[in-house]
Length: 372
Image 1: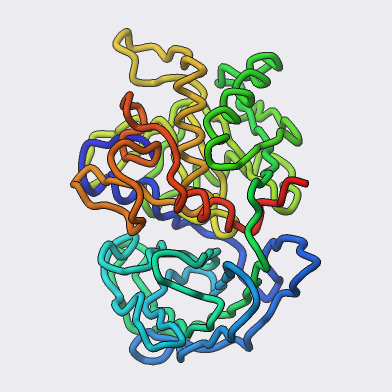
Image 2: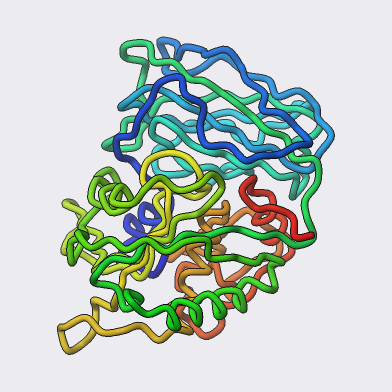
């Protein structure tokens, strides 16, 4: 996510996507991994305090594990407990907000479905096994709540045998008629080249698998933390994406319109939830033009700056939080800081580059495939 004017905007914009999506018993989109099958727990029910019973992930041979958690329509939940095989608590609270700033392993609040990627890092060794619990939160306020109607949660997980030294991620461009990329194949090619330049240090390569035009997209989309219907509508204007392909939506103007902290703020990029791949509006959203120009009318982005922000947003999709928030809160990785592309202000001249820990997290995402 790009810079914001208040801490509330800074924390909410990048980390929470809360809009209606389909529930049911259909499995989520999952990667094809010949080495390991998907493992499934029987559905469990949130108790009267709004907590699931402990769910155990047994030891496995690998470096990371991806958890898909699904609940029922209208249900918001968070990871509220994570205890490893040695009894160390990495998450031990159900705090208010889009994510727990004090937790040793940070994950985002979800609605109805979410992907949690847990790599081994900073002393946490998921391969030894661990236990998780999830807790209900109010979708409107992101505060803990007790159970109402006894919703269920279904957990599926996929261990990853090893992390690649280099990975490849397929993209699909959804281009609105208000984007500077519409009808511009050379500009799209140049953007992809510059994006790969930004990602090279992280060992990640992206490929463009398809381009879909969105002729009916509105010239602007307004949203806020719990109102993402407009963003979902942009993505719903295209056919379903192939499995493991990240949608990049090039919209018109994107405005974060918070009814409590107004006025509306134009954003340079937006990822509804850190750890993309499941849940509502699961995509990266980019404004097709700059909507905060001094002249009043939208103007084209410089491609270097555009690629830099897009790389930052892909970092969110693949599981990275801001290295430093606008209020000074840091991430839980020991080798990041202000001079890092995941700074909350990626446009700063010093906000560049990826750390080794960030590289491991990016390559842990199950949609990233090894480069032969």
